[in-house]
Length: 637
Image 1 (cartoon, rainbow, N blue to C red):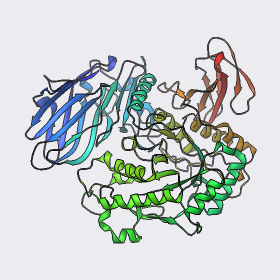
Image 2 (image 1 turned 60 degrees about the horizontal axis):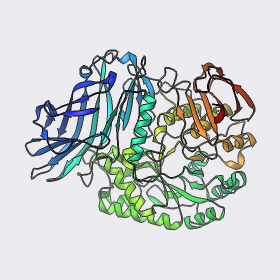
Image 3 (image 1 turned 90 degrees about the vertical axis):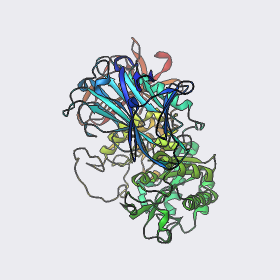
Image 4 (image 1 turned 180 degrees about the horizontal axis):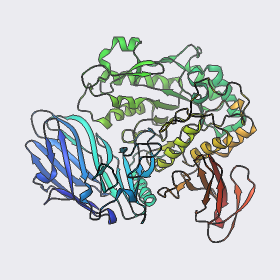
């Protein structure tokens, strides 16, 4: 239990091996720094305490789920600029020293940035530096005992993002550790106004996987939006990129109908349909217009979907030239620009009322055109800005404004996907959230996305449906298409890199990608030119339809080899699916520990349906970059 002690102005944590005392809250405004242990707190209602410093009231309370909230009320006659609030769990606070070398850490990014996975607390991983921050939640797990501590934010979220950083007592980071939880607000509190943090839940006394499941259930119970079944579809981006034409969309709609029947629901047009970023009208490759396109998709038996980057505007557009005050600025008041593939981009300021009306008109028009699925991309770039029209809007609220107005404009029945935006901004509004970085036809992307999706699997059904990005299988074994890949520079793997590194993947690696996406239980969206795949490629796609009813469970998330050889188990209908991955470049032998019981059981190969005889404790020999998977009747386990 995490509780506030009025007498000391500090917090205490009762969590087994992770119990701690003397945890201090620090509040930073533009003009002062306050410490909770230097304020005079007294009771202020049930499960709450409050203190005052000049005209700033600080109230700390606990809610029905024993989550802790902090409220700040400005009782002055002038605005107060709030920067952040930080809870410091210093290494010296813990009842028993927490040695960094004895623990593993779930690094959890709040959006789809790549630094997500489990690593030793004291060392870097191939995919991250030694001490990356986590967003929204994190877990520390003790290697010897398996006991863990989870720190996570809950809805309804406040105006600031929650960031968690490990704190070490030595520069070499092999001594004892603690952590800091920061609520990053960067907003102005008007006179008489109150700002609150997101509720913070801390769970202990159990293994990491069990704590993660408890957190998922509490999180889901507080999400006001009803969960929708995961969806299936086809998207133009991975194969056609921005070169997509209307005829390409029509060909793939016909191929999907012929190959998958009604098992694919949506045909989604991604980047390339628009005139220009910021000019969201049909361009020269879609001369028939969007209404005609949507009509054609529906006539083919699907629902139409569309990609947009609503806040990103090319600087060489009338919109940018005529409305210079509509755009986000940096800390100096200069316009914030970002160089992207399609040119130099500015970012619309969603706190500006005229921008809000502009965006409402855009999405009402797209809905009137007939679109039923909306993929919202690049919106998180607004978080790189510093100066906004309304300074009272907190960091997490910026994107919440955007997604709320999109939802209001497209209606509650349309399917809304947040691609890259943090869960703290979109929970309760969207139907699905991207849980990985972009995929491409390279092993570096496959292994990166597999690890990231596995770490984010708890989000499926809690935040919304997981979107693990596209399932793609095209390679020389699954297609003889001479145009399957765009021409691009080739380069070897780089340390800490993955983006288009190495050679294009083969069919074995494609199966790793397909099955890792399937196990999330989330949306299944195909990204190949369907008519160009042979039977080998199509058979892989058929195996991951329909999506799982619920995500798989990680069975070795916090074990030393959990990142390299993940073991997962899922249930579908009357079958249990047991899966072992080898995400390394070397052969591995993995002892099967999946709760199969004492006796050998009959099973079938996931891909070929050939009969297998497997047992608990069996050694599985895995080639490099491969996956072993079996379907087992639940009655036999």
